[in-house]
Image (tube, rainbow, N blue to C red):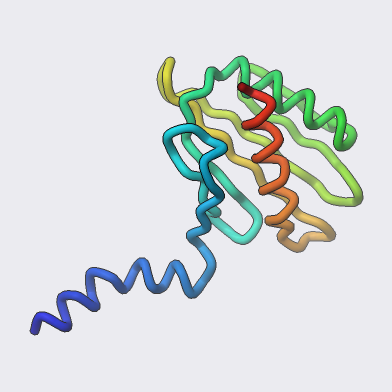
Length: 127
């Protein structure tokens, strides 16, 4: 009976670990860690201000590729770099909490490593 309960409690964590859905990036975010929410998307909630993240995302996007669409009010940037499409989404929850979400796809296939690279550069730039 106890084994069944333990297995049921840890099953979601084991499943996410096997599928690769949970991916901790590190301490570049502040208090929270970043995690992959799908095969092409990485996101984290951070305590950095919205404006700092937005300006950092624009700077990194302009350096790395060509911006196709940007909308500061919606917190959305779409760009293309090395035949990879990148979508950056910044969502303000409160004055102290902002979510940074980055997706990347190359030829319709997930490119999580590029999304991770963008995430790290944006969070470092937003300091």
